Image (tube, rainbow, N blue to C red; front, top):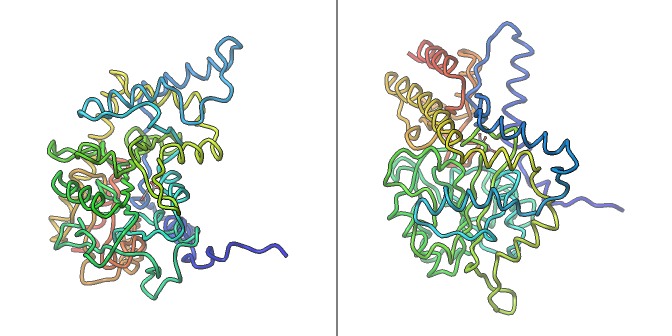
Length: 412
Ligand code: MLT
């Protein structure tokens, strides 16, 4: 008898964004005349930068000629792209990263979801709450948790709750909470919070002292405007010995539909095997990556390379400025309504406290039905997100203005 992986049945019914999609489609079907504005999922709305498009066109032409055609590439990516990452993402910030420490992939969702495979099933996992749901669900699927309680928190995971009092940067685990793996995301999805150099240094120190590994999701680093905020965890001394970093072109350069990202696994990084011997994680991830993945397509890697050209960098900055202007419009609209909010300064998400103590889904339904605006209920990101709501700044600028006007009319 074929049997399923029972752990899948522990998962909450739907992944957050498909569930939002389902509710929105139902509303749209019942109200075909309503013009819905979507500020829910963080999906970009502006086209790829011209430099990227030109590079992709040229790469497609390469594929059309025998002399310049590419078949399978290196699973971990072409050096032409890794060299740009090394230079522009790291060396420019005083960080050393070697080419064989970089693994090009088709997304940070996949990488942050798959990385847990190289760790023991008995690992003690810490996640922040609220959190990007992928970190939780992939550990549930792998069998690292028991059932979820009424609040949706899984037995066996350690939730590091955060909120307004700590500006959504959680405190370190307590002395009794001995962790092996810690997922951190800064700038944060969903709250838009950033961690200072001092805060990240504390985490790195904690990881060293506890022999723990930090899985650092930096998919939104390009949106940091404060020069004092680190873009990479490797800007912190000693982080190469304790951290894996995830980066993405999805939000930075509009690649949500094009798919390219990368993960850095430093050579120094080790963890123990069951005999207590130290094992390097870089060859382990390389083994996993090259067994289960055949590389990002050549035209897409050429497109990603173009992000680093002079024109590409300028155009990416324009894109980021466009979205961060949306974030400003959202923040100012909320301020005018007296709604408490965070984020939207160094991150493309604005996190707000629902008015009148409404729960997150009730506020979602109200905004959808009365203002025809879609956001993301905070409770979808964890128990500590209840009573909060996320608005994405990735919308079309005119629509964001209209959405805030509709919210103003609805809530004032
Ligand atoms: C989000 O809206 O949280 C993101 O788009 C999800 C993702 O990047 O997978």
